Image (cartoon, rainbow, N blue to C red):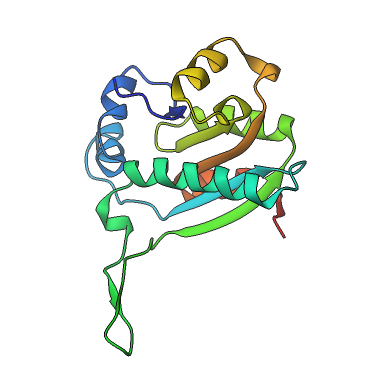
Length: 173
């Protein structure tokens, strides 16, 4: 099983299989027979108590890198060339939102997202702040429940699952 940055895909008897498969394959595997791939959205939820822009930018950066590793190539557009002939690297095609919430709400949302194997959920906890991954892993393993303080939470999944859970959250201004 591959472990990277507190990444969790709902509980399932096939969770280990889901973890090593790209998200678009997990969707096809999760449902028997033919299925239309639903519209997907991406939401970043940050701790509303954090005011430091650098801390929020760092959390978003780490979560974006981790999520990008999991998303199918089809979720990205092609490179774009500007009027001077300079190439600009591809960007994501998926809808995305940035919201804020308190610790209890973030904890509850993480639990709800984790219930559905079609939703990719990645968190960035206070324990992840050190640059040393071994320290992060050791510190997080000693915390549970309300002891875990989230700086940010990222969810990517079907709009009909993700949007209803996040639509009442305030936008990050």
